[in-house]
Image (cartoon, rainbow, N blue to C red; front, side, top):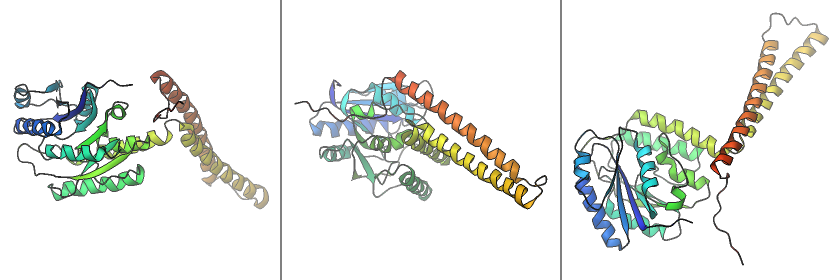
Length: 313
């Protein structure tokens, strides 16, 4: 059972946001004071090359985590989560496009019984290209991960602290956290929030992040669907390939025996043999992956399920 030192942890990655951090901190403090809850504010500097760190060091209350170089927003969030001690963790961007005044709104939605509440930038103040990439990613996410939120790219979210600290983040996974937790059985809600145009600094979003995000989406889909049973994926595919190969060779044998067909210049016998060999390799790979995953869960001291609670009478 976790012991929480604060009610809220506000976790904000910042990267070259010298024009925003002071005003953002002031707004977060004002929003948290209105809530009458104990809180902490954590800024994670992701290797800024401007005066972001210098300005953050003058702010209080604030826990500042400094990276040695730019590791990315996902790594910054992960470091902030592990440093936090709040019962609820609220995340947001450091560019002032999220409004700290909406923190109360997401917490009110969370009080309805949700484990995660995601902000929905219903009226987005972004460029058309950024909206296009975001909406395309949302469509793919709904197909692969089957999550229920409209706007995974909105950083303003509130999480059950225990749920969030149970996962490790890599790549560009931060935008898929609600989907990851929803696959584990946690409840996800959504609420419309404000979105403001960027005034200071430059956007860190580009097409490269979209490509990385898509690759991470595939990784999450596979991990959550087959991590505990990789043999079902690779072994099943291997058995299918072996079956196709055997059918091809059987048909070639029938043609040779009953129709005296010449097979020396035909590619199908080679194709049948290739399918069988490939299928065997897939099946063996599935067996090895199955052993690796069982050892992984054993070393981690966990299983591929999450217990909500235990009732004893």
